[in-house]
Amino acid sequence: MIVFDGVSHDYGGGALFRDVSLRLEGGSFHFLTGPSGAGKSTLLKLCYGELLPSSGTITLMGQNRRAMTRDQLAEARQRIGVVHQDCQFLDHLTVAQNGGLPMTATGRRLLDADLGDLLVWVGLAEHAEALPPTLSGGERQRAALARAVVAAPSLLLADEPTGNLDWDMSQRLLLLMIELNRMGTAVVIATHDLNLIRFAKAHVNARVLRISARKLTMAGAEL
Amino acid sequence: MSAAAISGLVVPRAGQSVWLVVFSAAAMGFLAVFVLALATSSAQLARGWEAQLAQTATVRVSAPPEEMEMQTALVMEVLRTTPGIAEARVMEPQEQAALLEVWLGPDLPLDALPMPRLIELRETPQGPDRQGLRLRLSAEAPGAVYDDHTRWRRPLVQAAARLKGVAWGALVLIGGVTCAIIALAASASLASNGQVIKVLRLVGARDRFIASAFVQRISRLALFGAALGTAIAMAALWALPELGGDALGGTAQHMAGIGFQGAGWLLPLLVPPVAMGLAFLASLATAFHVLRGVT
Ligand SMILES: Nc1ncnc2c1ncn2[C@@H]1O[C@H](COP(=O)(O)OP(=O)(O)OP(=O)(O)O)[C@@H](O)[C@H]1O
Ligand SMILES: [Mg+2]
Image (tube, rainbow over all chains, first blue to last red; front, side, top):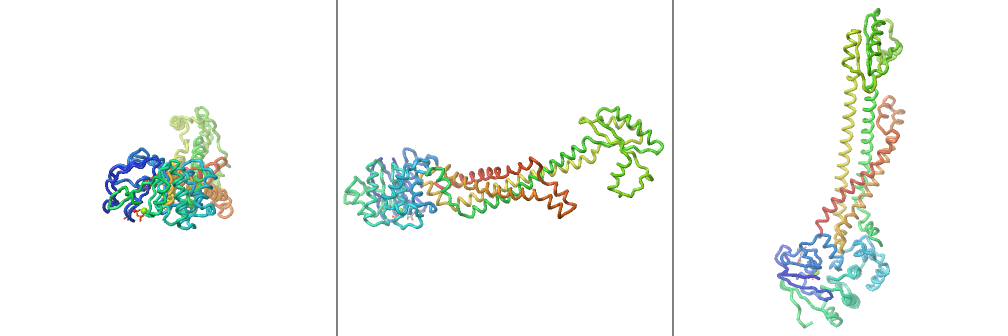
């Protein structure tokens, strides 16, 4: 699904990480941890093609990222759900319209009932007609997750999806992602929350990647 | 919700670029209609002068009073036998007086003045062999001068043609300025909606979808603005002759010269769709240019 081969990234002030090689297979479940500023968000941005690697090759959905046209990138993204760390929305559209965007903005049919069920699942049914700027931080994250999964993507990239949520809601959202993973979606969750990782490991065969000291490593069995 | 419906919603409705587009399209539409009127009326004027002058000519016979009748008869004979002349008519002294009255006033003692005799000609569309006619006239009646009005016609027709050229040039300029303003408005609109573009790209929308959402919005605003400007300009043109007639007296004729006639009133109706087309192209080019900067 996504293959990194000897990837380095550098924003201009020295390499953030070097020589990262990684395979994200269909149906896999990964956590991505590491200290703040280590480059977790950057790695996810490389995964959905927002950034180009400074060196090395990234293959997205079977295509070399560098060789992809803008339309090919758009098509690849139609199969990738993203929860941005700062949850970006179209602030003048309602939560429901934002949630449906991955379908409606790409010409795919969205059933109102499906969107309704999803909003109920993330606990936003009452806020369906609200505008994003009126939501709390946690509500925004839930709306962002709803948008990320609405198109039943083959790959879900979630950047701190539970950062602003209480433990109950965190569990609830994690279960939603685990449910999706059982239906075949590959999941990558960037998080600092070790409890979340432990909880997930009880339900799913999750692997933990760790970025630190400019390297990506597979975390040990201590978690 | 369908793709078409969401495409109409993703670009926020508010924003200064809305007024920029509507106002500039209205102003340009207004100007375009006036210049169009100028272009068509100058074309009409040129055609009118051309037609009026092209097939008429005069022969002026100057001779001592005792020879006048004979020379006039000789000239008429020459004209009758010249191919290309449809009709020749000796003007009555009263008609000549009426022509001169405009210049010299009504109390002219015409009988006391040695007046040349005027013969009015109507030529066939091919016209006579002018050089040959002049030669024959000078042989038969030395006091006769053939005048085909070329002297008058040429500068008038040239002036009208130039006016028409200037008007079309102005139309092209107006179109160009409209394109430039719309492109500016489009890039302002795209720049102030960076978040919209980013989110749409993030969820996998193609450039075509994003661009068309902006282009749709901007072309519609341009259509609305240009229609407004066109309507105001047409109303103004419609009111122009009356206004001139009542308030400005003598200039009425002149003012009434700019405008549309009959089916010509349909011509300015092309302005709004053309403005929309220009807005479409300008904003499309701008949109794709801006989108290249967003992954
Ligand atoms: N657009 C950018 N330009 C320059 N530097 C950047 C840019 N984005 C991020 N960085 C830098 O790269 C480093 C890694 O950022 P990144 O957002 O990937 O970290 P992170 O691991 O996600 O951190 P956190 O856990 O706080 O979210 C940071 O030091 C950040 O300042
Ligand atoms: Mg981050």
